[in-house]
Image (cartoon, rainbow, N blue to C red; front, top):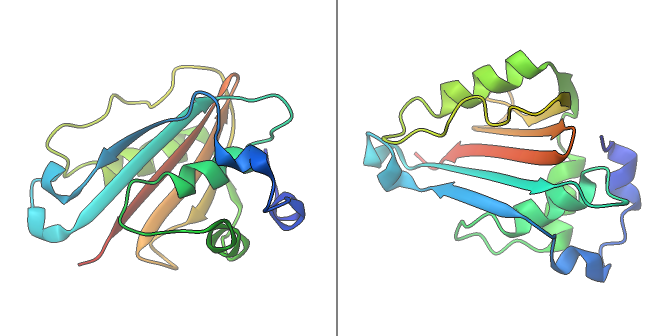
Amino acid sequence: MFTVDDVLNIDVNDNELDSYTGLFTTYYKSYAFNCVDSCEYIFISRSPKEDKDNGVKFMFRSYLDDGSCRDRSVSDVKGLLLSADFKLIAEDVFNEKVKEQCAELITKPQYPLSSKKFIGALIMYDLDQEFMVDMFAEYEDEYIHFYWDTTA
């Protein structure tokens, strides 16, 4: 599992950030919700673990490929991660927050997001500090990044 130090020390010009093998993202834009006017947005990225990555490169690539209209740069992602909480959470907390934020989706993802052996999870942003929920989870052979926000 990555730490703030890993974000600080990542080489932001590293060509390894151009892609991430196996990265797959599901996007839920406002029309996927019961109330389109809520302007909610979710993306769920997942990928098999790459050798020599503790999840930090996965998170960078996930943010860069988030499917939103934002044109994020590597330095934007670094700033976002450096201002995050990095609070460890249990698997049941991760799963419950995913379920809560997906409650208004017309077609919901399958819960839990992974049936693999849980290693750990971080909550980066939560509704108590920003109007977004941003979490990272590590399983025995994959990473998952869950992101929810609204512009309403």
